[in-house]
Length: 333
Image (tube, rainbow, N blue to C red; front, side, top):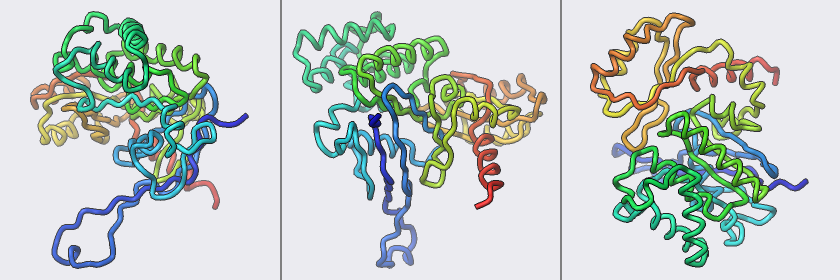
């Protein structure tokens, strides 16, 4: 069986920012190597999750697959056709959470109709398809509301709907449930699975949420050091994560000094700000088993001016990656 998506030894480098006279006078370019040789294949109907710490190149990888960023070397193919060709790019849907890509003053309905027309749907077909997606993603009540007046969760669901306007062979999703409550997150992922069955296509998703990777992924790749350093099944990931306790908290308006205060809370072992987008931050808090003073943690956040928008128990990404690195080092070369 031929894979739907093939990523072959993809690399990507960016020029480093130079600071200081000595660096500015250097003639040789100073490149930052983000991806160093990513290779993977994703089959029909498969859901592939990529996990890794913030800044490891996960979004860069999605942009390369979407044809929005050129790789420094390597190739991406959709059904054997290079993604640099229009015929392949048209087979990719991108659930992009970048709010700047939407028109803030027009309604949710007309935003999606605009993108449907760009995809080549005729006016009547575009309106029918958009109405179907608004119903499926529980956005009918937001149909005529300007995008700028929608809640963060509504905007996120609209972004996923946009990626499915023309059911793609490859759907790319970047932190798709970042701002969704558990109920809407579960419902949205069910809709994605149902829609993708129609095309027999595949999903490539990047996420910081291990629970989501466990729930949705058929295979899970760990992006580390610019390559897929580990590839796991949900079962092997769950075994690796077992016993590493922690919580993930989403907040808005948190003062930088609050992190220092949180480190003093009883039971907190380490804290990592895993992502920051659209004014929202995600805190991965690694805890000592059974020792977290949760009431103190919440009080420290609210006293520091933070609005708590999400809370989830589970293995922190940083703890998992450290465990995987230890297992890697234990295997003889």
